[in-house]
Length: 262
Image (cartoon, rainbow, N blue to C red; front, side, top):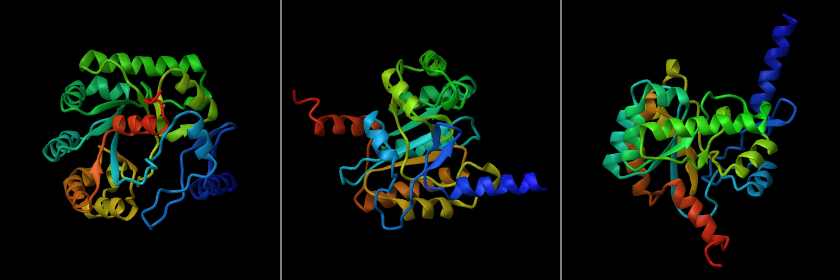
């Protein structure tokens, strides 16, 4: 009973803590939500992200939105998502795992053929913070090779760490390996396939949290997301938002930093 109480208290601490510490030297991605449509505050994480060229939002103030989907396995909704994106001419990035590429090569190929970006979510979905640099490198390269075998995208630039767990070392090492870490500024509990709440819930969650420059994390296993997506896109376009790709974000940042003006 005492052990169970300690476990519950520990879980509550992790859920309520603004900067969730993971293990001895790692962190779980988190931020302070707000309801005034501003970029959420990430506290001490901001310095680390800037140091290693990582992103969680577009801070330019422009009304841009960057849709990203995490795909670890398939529940039958990704094709619907792709159909909506194609109809509305909206780009997205799909962060996939080795399991997904192996089980759904046709969908990965379609993502690329439709003009979307494939992002690296690792091959086996491990905790990078307890791994050596060489082990992380192999995880990323194995996934990149798997994607190249089934699609025309031969290199992967963008990385989303499994479960959002990271450390300064993992940011540093992956940056040295040529990857750009992509976190998020808008997300909600959408991954539990046994606890879907209807498309209105997904719609309201996105609309309540939306802000200029949002990097939106959605899970393609959610029936709510698949059903709400078209409605979300149409309404946000009416509100003056533009849907951009991560390539647009990185290029804009490089231009603002003067990298193309030398």
